[in-house]
Length: 379
Ligand SMILES: *Cc1c(COP(=O)(O)O)cnc(C)c1O
Image (cartoon, rainbow, N blue to C red; front, side, top):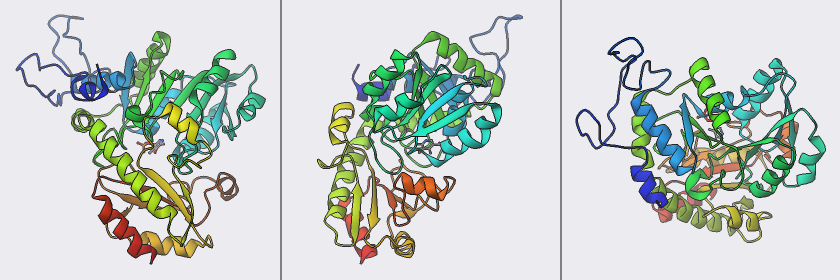
């Protein structure tokens, strides 16, 4: 089945009780058993819920995965992934990653004896240098947030396999429409479903998908044991959102390209970070592993003044100043004080998150209006 067909049909079957074409919101905590241990597949909604199960199947299908699990947030999915490790294990993570991921790694899991190494993964040697017998996981975010660096998933996966290390990808920015990381060699894919998969800025949710049966058992064990599940109403909203994922992503890509080109030619703009530019350092890798370049665009201002960035983000009228991304509406953000404030100043500078850096989540409005909005704000 092709992607658009899967987005609309995967995981969904007419409701067995009524024939309802849309999976109902099974707002029930428990399920009546015919006799002790005899049930219709569901016993308690932390362990399994039919609305959530439909969504888990849908997201797994989109990622070409066998198993999926949904969580209360993207970070709850990340939490599940790292809980597969044990004290003494080591993780090599990209140094250019979502602030909340950095925070959970360093302020939660380091306390439990898991060690994280943050390296620039544009050079594979940086990964290789940190590999030792305790290395159990490599963590990638690509395209990265907010610098839009592209890490070569296949190349990293070869390295990981050679050392018997699992590879996890945070695929939030690309979505399975643009990038199918399991097919490229990853073992685990994580999503903040809050973003493009949900797509309408009305749900906070996370997901994890895997192909390996042992990993799946661990995933479901932790999902059930830690209990950070999503509710059935949220699952219903995301099932609805996913039906248009392919159409939304096409428009996100088109609008993203138009905005990136507009910014590149603007005299007040210094650098524009968007993997679709031929002179983007990782453009060839992006072309190889992605179907399009997405709707995320970052840029810095000439002079690199914090005040200029603050003024700009408060002057846009259609681009709303807000955290998050991936919804139908365009958002503007200032990583250094918002999404990436949890990352220490020095580390931020190293990875390019300078004071004037601005991140756009380009939505689905008419591109002409979006460009006009940026033009007046820059003026
Ligand atoms: C938002 C985000 C997360 C965290 O997801 P939540 O749903 O906010 O918990 C993780 N990774 C990336 C890349 C994100 O953008």
